[in-house]
Image (spheres, helix red, strand yellow):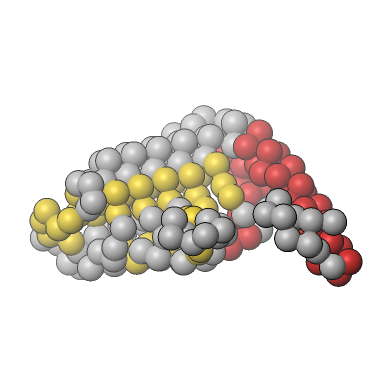
Length: 197
C-alpha cells in the first residue's frame, strides 16, 4: 500500500494511518455536533455541552451563538469572559484566554497553519495566549504563536501576527502599535450577556 505521496507503507504504518483516520472522523463528528449546539439560543445549554467536549470555561463566562471550534480540548477560557457570535477558536495547540476578556463578533483565533516552505506543506502549531482584560475588536484575526498582554486592545479588522505588549493598542494589517490604554489598574467585570444570543 502507498500513501498519497506515493511512498510505500509498512504494515505498522498502514495500521497507524488507519487509526489516525478513524480518530479524525470522530473529531469531525464531534465538531459537527458542537456546531449544531452553537445554534441553541440558551447559554446554559451551550456551556454544558462545550464543557462536556473538553473546553475549560470559567465562572460567568459566555460564549455567544454560532461560535465554531477546532479540537476543543486544548481551549481554556477564564472567568467573566465574553466570546462574541460567529467567532472561531482553534484548539489544535493551547488556546488560553484570561479573565474578563472581551472578544467581539467574528474574531478568528488560529494556532495552527501550514508551513508554506515545506515540501509536504506540513502543519505547524504554536499556542495563543490572551491575558486578562484584553479587548479584541470585530473581525480581527489572531495568528499562531501570539501572546496578547494584559489590558491590550486589538482594533477591528486587525491581523495580529506578533506579540502585543500589555496595555498597547494595535490595529491594521499587519497589526502595529497605534496607541496605549491610559488606565493601567483594570479591575472591571464585563456586563450581562444577551439572554438569547
